[in-house]
Image (cartoon, rainbow, N blue to C red; front, side):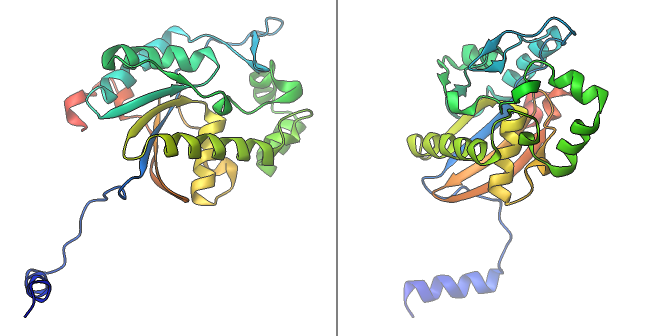
Amino acid sequence: MTSLDAQGARTRQAGYRQHRFVPPPGSCEILLIRHGESQPAYPGSPFPLTDGRADPELATEGAGQAERVAQRLAGQRIGAIYVTSLRRTRQTAQPLARRLGLVPNVERQLREVGLGDWETTYRQKVAENGPLARRVWAEGRWDVIPGAEPAAEFAARVRDAIDRMAAAHPGQRLAVFAHGGVIGQAMALASGSRVFAFTGADNGSISHLVIAGSQWIIRGFNDTAHLDPAFSPTAVA
């Protein structure tokens, strides 16, 4: 009997156990963190624009969520931090970057979906729930909004950014601070679902992808355990 035969016999005798998921060799783990809550929007006082996108700062609540994210992730093996060109992601990443001594990389292609005519009025339009807002949700497409970024272009840039980050960091775990629309699009690409099936990630939430070449594996969506006041960083590895 060869050594492989002997090993197989021992395995059969002991039984075939279930095992925890292990990322494939050389894969990249991407933790997609939605930025903390940003400042309220007020009619007649539009947010400034950066890269053609509304660019509010974090609200006080958002700064607290950023600290909670840092507590959650400080003990993990984070190889790099990424943010977008919008300041709410940079501000959310700051507490974790300080703890880990890492300088965030800017990935412009992960900026939020362009909302066209609604770029500075999106929250108000959704709250008013007019016919066009209802159509956006019914059809599950941002580009129902006049002038909004075409769906195919948005999907392509999100895919390209994630593929490039994964290729640059084989075998590493990344903390990527991004936006709700971007996270929803990434999860839809990984699952083959409708884009809006994953819309609604909470501020400060963590979603988890494993990128192994062309295979995208979802390991978690909208994890908010660290935002619970009773959360203990030692309770979650």
